[in-house]
Image 1: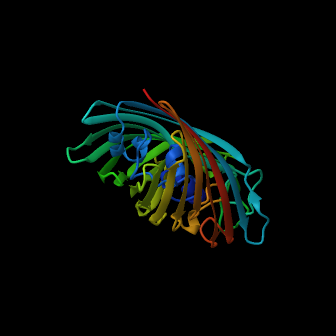
Image 2: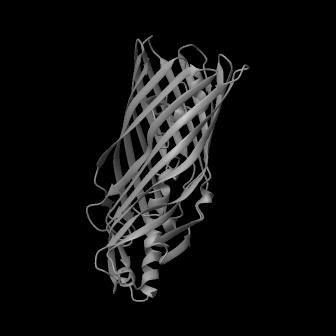
Image 3: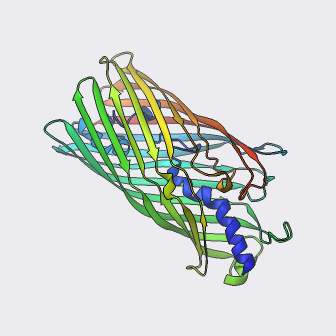
Length: 416
């Protein structure tokens, strides 16, 4: 039993970053902090106070009151990842370059005005990494994957004095995977009893909400805010180890049921749009993520037969977004943006090389072409940064992370 709990301890520490970063990755880490739509991404995420296309279902549900008639959006974001981890005194470990496409869809209608209705299906987070060989830090995994999908039915109402309020019901699907996690089963005699987690696969559904405000008192300025509520639940799946070690001694199986606690933190995004001319739009937004809700991490194997809880103590994060959109001709618009994370959420002792949490910079550039009722948008986006970590927890060595994550976002908007 001592060995079993030791394995659980190392397992939890190694997986905590991977399994809890899914929603927190919106503002921190190397996943995109701007997740949906070529216009929002092209403006560096400074979109909550503008929210003037069908992706407002995600960014600010109150913004859909700007759309008269029926609007549909179909898009795809393709992530290209480049990750490096260098333990102190060791060679740089480079993840394989990967191409990860994720789709998006939304529909908005004013058919019931002053009530406006909408629905969206988005994949706001898709990231991970795969390393071709073991790490010099043996408790770091070889491969990890994170995906989340949100289905968001939305209602919004525009008051007589111009203030719009909106709400969305978030139906969230989360899937996390981890492979090649070496664990030391006897810390009193390091390196004598080792095992490998060959495959961890957990998934589950969760429920949350999104609330938005939008107000455009005059032609030249607009204001918006969006609150996404905290979500807490366990996600279920299986854990498989390689050699039939202590877990198997207790459970008589090499493939066991596992439940991981999942906290998706509350986020608040607020900003404004400024329109000095008919052709030019500026945006500014601030995002706050309440990550201190992630205080601990719990894993249960085989309905709680084996269970342990460990502290996490994440920190709240802050991100600023700025962007501009310029209508060069009646049909062609160009846009650019920048975003900056001001701190990391995840402490050094619970981070690993697969999903590196970095206070990143973000740059974007894009264009859109309007052909009658069809709008075609294309945006390039990059997040990049570096972070030094101090030995502790699952990291017996100091380390350095570098990341450069690019995305190409294509979107088609059509007014029916």
